[in-house]
Amino acid sequence: MNLKKIQEAVEAICNQGCREVNNIIALGENNQKIEQIQHLSTDEKIAVINELKNIMDVYKK
Image (cartoon, rainbow, N blue to C red; front, side, top):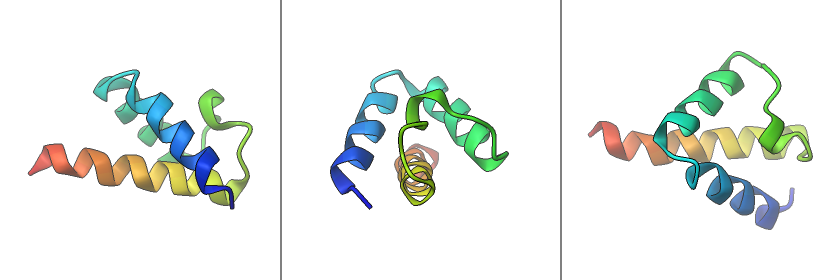
């Protein structure tokens, strides 16, 4: 697993705003194609979605 690729993907997605982050999380939870992370391995995609969830959890508190 390439942590640098994961971090770069997370940062790029977060730069698109909360709405896009939530959309991508929803796509990931429904096992749908996510263009922004298609270049990543399955494990890396899972890591990106989990990291996005962790980031968004901060806003729910």
